[in-house]
Length: 201
Image (cartoon, rainbow, N blue to C red; front, side):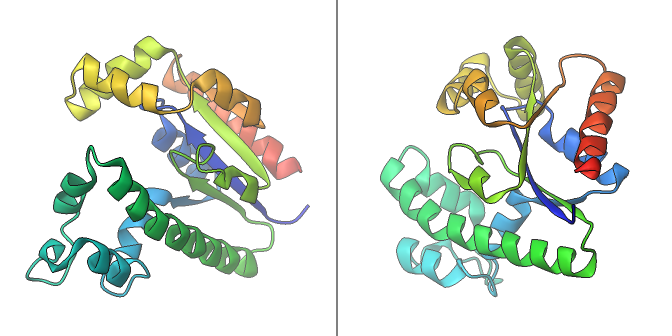
């Protein structure tokens, strides 16, 4: 088979970025949703003007960039504003991802393009990919890792986990599951198996 577009998702602090780096080291092309989100909000990005129109010029810093912290503060705890922001940013990110994937696959028809994003399943975007990888781990580890990484309280982390679709439900959508509960070596071994399986398609 020729090139593949693969979605990579997982629960909070399950090690999605670590798995993405491993896949990259094995030869995959990795695109990160967060980076694309930032790009669409740059002055030449598709979401820049519509977001300013919606939230006002106050979110623009003297250097012309959108103050993402200020923007985050405006949508935090305001589901309606967050939904409006997502309705602008998500389609722009999707189009940008598609354009980048197309460019990579045009240059290398055998490429495996991996798109790393937190809410692929929740947003329904997983349907646009040939295969879906889910990164998972024990909930106790999720909580400990997220608390350490984000300097967050246990309550804050639990609230964030509860906002995501449960990992057990996400498994139903996944073609491959990588469990990062064990050692780094074990995670690397599982990731290699998945990469080789994708290569063999």
